[in-house]
Image 1: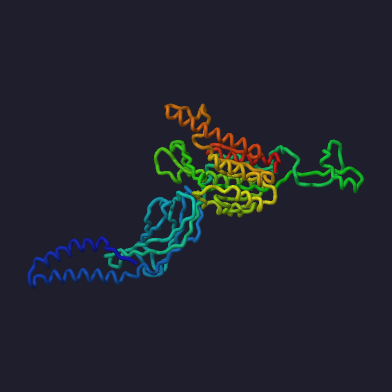
Image 2: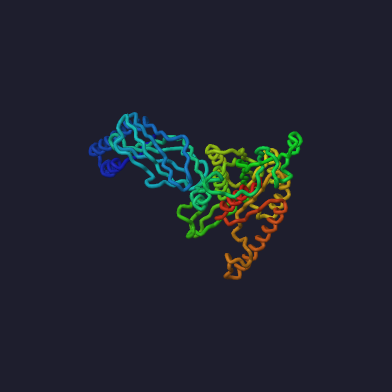
Length: 467
């Protein structure tokens, strides 16, 4: 506990102690005695007040939840319960020591009037998280006046509160509202299914027009009549999102501040003001992963998550349900870019060992670097025959055709910039053509369209029964 002079003590020092000290210095003999006594009296009163007030805050307890979950950019009311097991306090001021990635909404320092002995107060301390991740509230600070009002008594109380800040998917869900309104194949809307399915349903007698490849010859021999196998549309499939958080995932995505929606906190994480709002490609990858998890759950599929950089670091087996979605969310909300090159060969070997059933692998990888794209192309044959692979990345800001209407040059410098962007766009097209020969589609949408493009690919695969 610490004590600092309160305003009444400062006024006493100014109006009483200072003149008395001057009297003491300039007076002679017995004339000094009243000044000395006056100074001693003030000092003794101040010390007595300090001694009598040392235990005022010792019997206060402050309770907070051990774990708080919230969303980036959404107000977080931190619940606090303050109990007074000691003497009554005329007033009490409080405040939390918050991380740099939080902002206090409203008053930073709160105040409680007339906290009686044996009473407790519950209230909220509103914060605004500005960055996703895992944070801790370590300390709270309390302050009240002493018994005579000459001192301010302050105490620091330790807290053990973990705050998990998850990505804000509000804007992405709004863009994909039509997807989230779908009722799946069992709803009231008729959805045409392409393909005959892969799950065996039953045996029946052969009928004219049945495909000869569906004839079960062993059953035909036993029954001495042609017998056909029938299949049903697969309802449950395994979908894995594989997120690369190596060095290229830290590539910046810039959006003009004037065009950004007010409630879209994606581009406000690392922004320092000005005319641009900045975030990273990894943020888009994580948003896309959670959106796809929600869609897969609505479609009745099993959803899994894998992250890697120079090695595979997080693997969650495909399952379904709200609890599993929360598990996936807890696995990805702390991911940050690592300054290492991706090791695709190690990833493919791990996938081949872990995934024995055919699955849809949605890979969110940046292949804008030709060397990285070549390494990925060389490692892909390890899994592309067993699994269906889709690759998506965010289109680099300058990667457009030379005469694209999105980038009309106005100066000579912009002409050269467009030419460099054209070469980058051409390299990505060549990479996409090479992957297409292995049966892998490479999507290069703009950052606003990444989630919609990925979800559309998934629904198209499911509709055509490709896995």
